[in-house]
Image 1 (tube, chains in turn green, orange, red, cyan):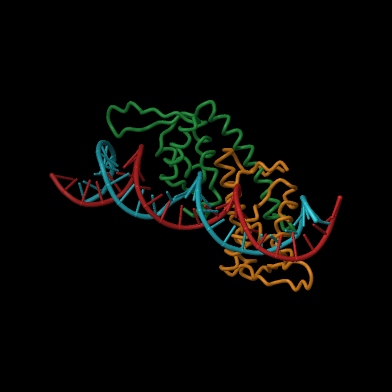
Image 2: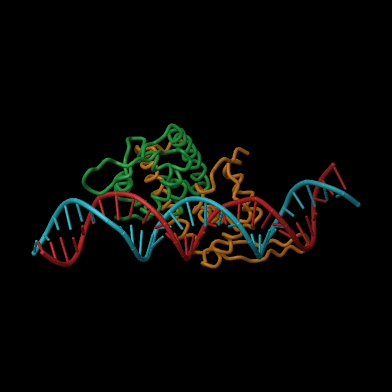
Length: 117
Length: 117
DNA sequence: ACACATTACTTTGTCTGTCAATGTAATATG
DNA sequence: CATATTACATTGACAGACAAAGTAATGTGT
């Protein structure tokens, strides 16, 4: 995969990305990990350690809820469900992303050249 | 100023922002500080401590060059000039920003790049 | 049957960028 | 002449990302 994205460019978006995945239905760690790779067209891999750190953070803050799957056979899976507060948080983060995106466009691409595609 | 941009959303872009300012001509710390606020329409303030940290980092890596202004009267000013390598770095960072922007749009909004203003 | 890959979750320790707090010293303003 | 502003700089703390390592189960190839 041609993942060339510096971690600093993603920093701060991890929670939002996870919430967006859970918005579409309950899921568990490893599947979320795979989903994010797929969603980005194999262009970005959110590392497992980062994911599980984020799960704990999000649950502590009441944005997601976890429960163990009832797999009678096979490895146990811890599922996550997005909470009401998590949905609101997602909407808020999305707004902030759009806002920051516009400001960054000005600060990075703004100035003299106008060689926009 | 309505600066409600989380620092994590800017993290990693500081160097690019500074290089973009210097691309338009030599400048010194405090003026760069003011320029960034102005460029963002008072929506973002890059803190002085962060700026000066970045200057040292950028100079150490050969992306900018510093020299003292010859103010015969008035406070001394340390000017910065962008180096060749800095210009290349800027172009590279800009590319990475555009790439990351598209990936983030997918991961956060779940759709395709709607780069609306 | 045995080795290896994959799934699945978790913890520990390290690194880096940002920034609050604080400091210096000069000039400009009311 | 007191205060604000300009201008540069250092220190210490914090938080997020993640490499590395570990545990334990299932699936696959030979």
